Amino acid sequence: MAKTHVTMKVNGAEVEGLVEPRTLLVHFIRENLLLTGTHIGCETTHCGACTVDLDGMSVKSCTMFAVQAQGAEITTIEGVANADGSLSALQEGFRMMHGLQCGFCTPGMILRAQRLLQENPSPTEAEIRMGISGNICRCTGYQNIVKAIQYAADKINGVEFKEAAE
Amino acid sequence: MNDMTPTREQREAKLEGMGCKRKRVEDARFTQGKGNYVDDLKLPGMLHGDFVR
Image (cartoon, rainbow over all chains, first blue to last red; front, side, top):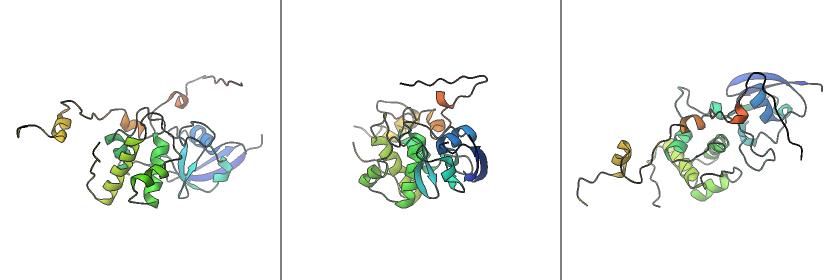
């Protein structure tokens, strides 16, 4: 099949590759760029495991062709940590609040939460739950994911995080 | 309860007592996309199988 040349910016680096028109963005990210932190869960847009940040929006990369991302600026989980390699506020929050068990949904969750906190730096619990409603987690029951995002929001806002009483 | 009872933060720092949260070692890589799940492996000569149902 004829291949198309695509270029995009992923985690700050210019990348390029030859893709078939049918190649999904998530396959391009995982197989051409070898960034396997972005996971394929359902391939039908339901689960959110493949969520990446594309030009300032959360996008499920299994629902987009690589050619559609031509020229786009993309962030994947590999580009989330701080410049010095330390965990970002969200990554730290997920670790501290036990916002993960098997970790499969975590890259998508973190990318989604990162965009959510940019759209709304101080979300309420309900806004967090609505904000991550496109991402499915089968381990945690979401309680600790919500806490992790609250933890990160407070850290970014310079407020002391107070865990709600259980 | 006397004054010597350690706070939860103190207990958790030393990982003692019931209800302590432990920081999991694997979370650092899981939150950075370095989980290395089966689908992430690439071995020399590896074959792939698909099920068509």
